[in-house]
Image (cartoon, rainbow, N blue to C red):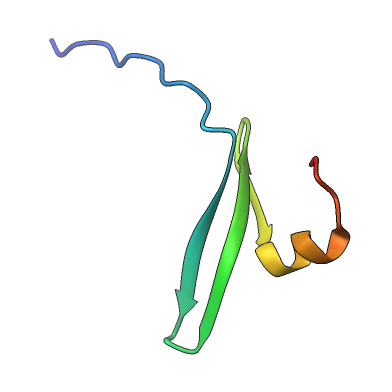
Amino acid sequence: QGEALKEKDDPGEFIFPIILEGKVNENDLAKTGSDINSMPYRIYETLGREEI
């Protein structure tokens, strides 16, 4: 039998680049939890909120 996986720490919020069909170049803000929720970073900046 294989070893059990060790639990990792929650990375919290992070930004990652996205390129769609070589045309759309976005930075996405992702917040982890039981699933991953993301929104374009530009929209996050427009909201002007420090905390999500």
